[in-house]
Image (cartoon, rainbow, N blue to C red):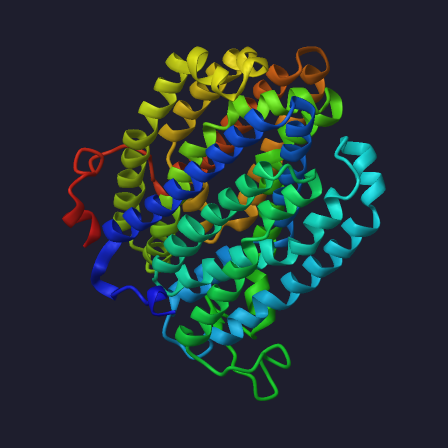
Length: 453
């Protein structure tokens, strides 16, 4: 476990950002190779069933996390050395573990109904349900390590361990010709060791008593402060509660399009849609890598009322996102006619989808990490409303266009939702805090020494 050591406090934002980008790069490469492997090895119907099942698993996991990971980052980053850290962790994990176990039982019980609704063969859902709690808890526990200021567990577990484990196990399953239920179980299985390793790291580095709290801040437990609120579990969920609903809607938003295509048009179009939009993972994970490093710094800056530092962080990361992702989107738009056939002859019709994806992400990236700034300021209710509006826009456009235009209709629905999701918080943080994605810090964004200070 020595490899999962704590990062030195003075290593700064630049080093953390590079670690986050490295972790994101590992995840992006793994996801792309898995899609390539599945589309080249399975027929479109089987590939679509695999993508639909894994998308629904990740959607459900995103709901069940209750956004406890971001809540832990917010609580631990504000006071990383207080002995109440373990109380905060138990406050987050108790409801998450409970609802995850209940959801896994429900998925197993309703296997036949899910198979009929989605077109995914029987047996896939129980296989995914067995690992669902680990998929949920791994993300929450790794997020907690970032709240303590360390990016190393994120890099080693989320950037290397889990994605490489998924790729190797799925590749082995394809080579031996295993069934679809076992193949999906192989995809989910690496979450189990990631959960265990993250828990061990936290046990070693998190200050406070090792026992879980027995109440809500009284009766001998260690209370913690979150802003002005006190009281263990109650205080933690007063902040995280509104964001839990927003995160659930965000999880639906991220993968709803694949499921809608599968339900309304069938597994084969869902496979084409997944292949054509897979490149968005590259840009999204670049954003995720920066968020993982910057979010604790934004929380501290806004908690201290330091709008100048918050502005510098926001404008700097926006320029980094533009520099890192615009070449990807513009290159994908230009090369899509040659890239998509790599997935197989039946995937060449996704060029128009690729153009919609590229144009949308160019605009979204130029807005920067607006929702992260909104959350870091504590305005989780506003984030909930924004995400709800974005999902509503996506569903309306999908229902109108998918039956007649198939995968292209889903791409247009996703695009409309993404634009709404970025425009709303951009207006809000601009009016309330005077924060804009570009400004006087944009030109000096790549002077890492100044940024890390």
